[in-house]
View 1 (cartoon, one colour):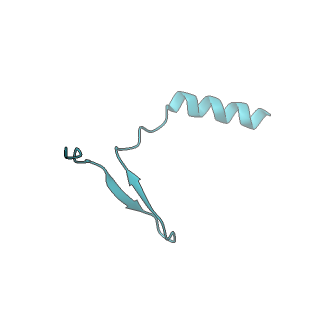
View 2 (view 1 turned 135 degrees about the vertical axis):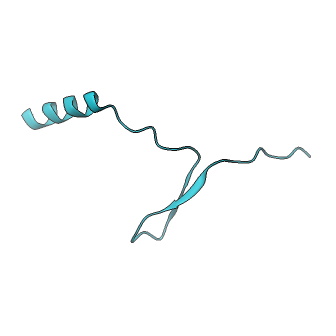
View 3 (view 1 turned 60 degrees about the vertical axis):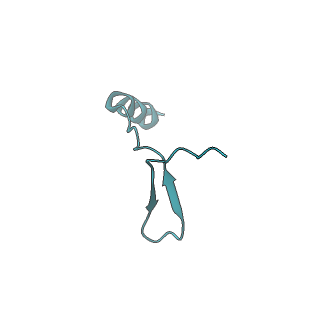
Length: 45
C-alpha cells in the first residue's frame, strides 16, 4: 500500500468557535485594487 504524501498544512482555531479549520496552504489575500473597487461600487449602490 502506498503512503499518502505528508501535508504541510495546519489546523487553525478561532476564539469563541468550537471548530477547527484545516488550512492546507496560507491564505492568498485580496487585491487592494479589487477591494477598493468593490467598496466604491457597494457604497454607491
